[in-house]
Image (tube, rainbow, N blue to C red):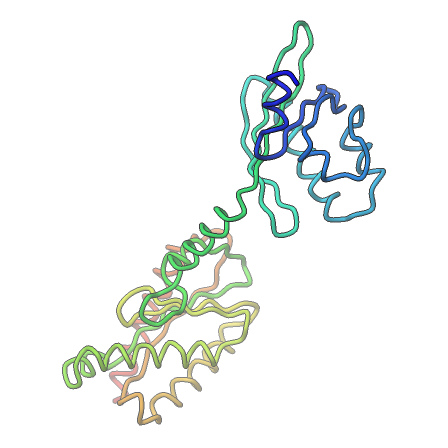
Length: 268
């Protein structure tokens, strides 16, 4: 067995060399194991035509798109991630020469554990340590559309809780409040804690009149519940329109919140 052949077969992942027209020339045993037949001489389209497994077909379509990206920039080595069921692969592709002929080399290895660890870390980073709900980072990384309405929500009388009962009790009230609001929302609506006693709720596919009615009902329940120790909340809202970025929508909602807070103080 030649040294090159040993390198190919001992590589801890998938390895393949293809003509630029797509036909497989060399593959290692790990690559072969994906298919019930010999793939040498076949293109990805040929393989797709010969199999019925939709998951394998999906993987091959990902590979085909990433192969095409390399051909568009033949002077660059490209890195991509492909997924197969619950497995993630990191792949490197580059164009190599053998005499006057050019080939595409593929090296791919399993990074599932790395991806899972990164996802867990990202999930932790996107949740508030105190209340367990989503945090400001999660809000900023969210994708919005015109069907979203953002609501700025600020607790009233919260300083009184901290000053009278202490910060531990204040934390307890924040947790109780966040979970209560979260339980009152629909599955497609999300509450975020963005700092202190300030929250943002993102509503999906519901008009501002309905939002106002729902939050007013929730506020009334909280004001009548002894366990909340007399807190309440004010809110302001803004629909996410195409020409308004998140920061702009939050600023407009925040202005409405303080108008709402002032109006409610004047009514007391």
